[in-house]
Image 1 (spheres, rainbow, N blue to C red):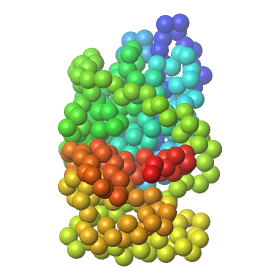
Image 2 (tube, one colour; image 1 turned 120 degrees about the horizontal axis):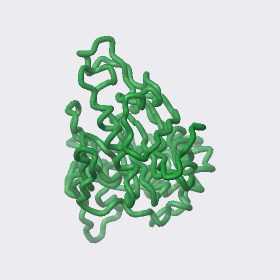
Image 3 (cartoon, rainbow, N blue to C red; image 1 turned 180 degrees about the vertical axis):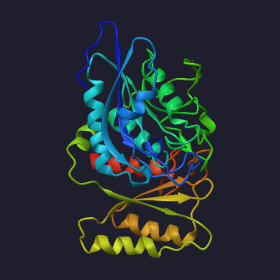
Length: 329
């Protein structure tokens, strides 16, 4: 990282975490039988032509398949982002990441950093060894976003589309444009190296400073699980989790997110178990399992809802809330 910096050069820090974008397969025609996280981020940048006046600096934070993302890596990643964002000469950060948990990492970083500079996550649906890999173009587009003045917040760049961390979801298993922002729509597009902005960038999160401080010093994290409501759903799993809590286990559940049907509705058996859990001190939140829309609150609801957050993002929000000791009633 000790490269000389020109007076007018803007630095973009590229943090590698592995994923398909760093994957290798035995043959160029194999786009699914690869091993993720094989190629280092410095090697990935070798084929990237940075925009004029931009210097790319690489740092390897992790090297994993993102399905195995952990709280420990999130913590390290947030700390490295905070370090580089505080550097005056750094225009922004790009994070290379696997697609499976990318939306979770993006939302986590927005929640704990609330950055006034851009933090841009990017990815690939094909490994680096593919006949036509999509990773290099995605990285180039992400660098454009990260180095553009006026951009702020955590966003995701994939297939030329820029998504807010609040709205982005992976919606397809295989195609190159695997992400969508639902009702909100994308923030911007990257077109031939130019940024076309459609709406406001993610705003700095007011509670981020306190949340970051608690996160940075955390040695353990609140356990929050997700359960799905469906036809014939039962409450046995909830009751079993509460029994663990009664036994005083160190890793006992503290929060529960229910992936509810429609506008936050729950099977009656699962709802009854959730109410029992809430009565015993477990924080319970409903989030819709629908890919679009939000839960519209109704009067006299005993179990609070997560609004527009998906179940995986509601889990992160609840976990950080419990970590900060600011649990809502």
